[in-house]
Image: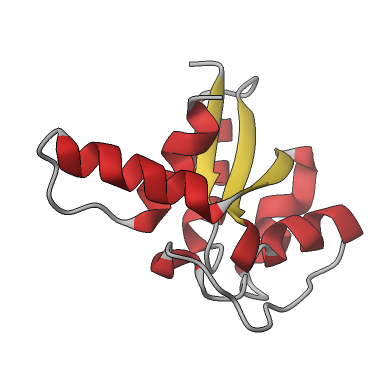
Length: 120
């Protein structure tokens, strides 16, 4: 495995996976991913300071929350996280449609965001 793409909501999953993955695979490239309508992690990463989410709007309801004050410094310390990327929500919606067509009935928007990023 060369890279890990982690969906970012409140930051708990991101901070935990960053720590665990880097301990097991020190050369692993780690990226955060979130929808453009809820891109506080990307804005925070780019500004090098935590910027709270205001009026999020996305189909990926698990990513609507602001990144937390406790997990954010863990994720961004030590140069572990290379970047946070934002994806157009319509692309995630298309991925959900494809999964439904092939018989996957329950799909969360967070997975669709990850799938969109990983297939580029």
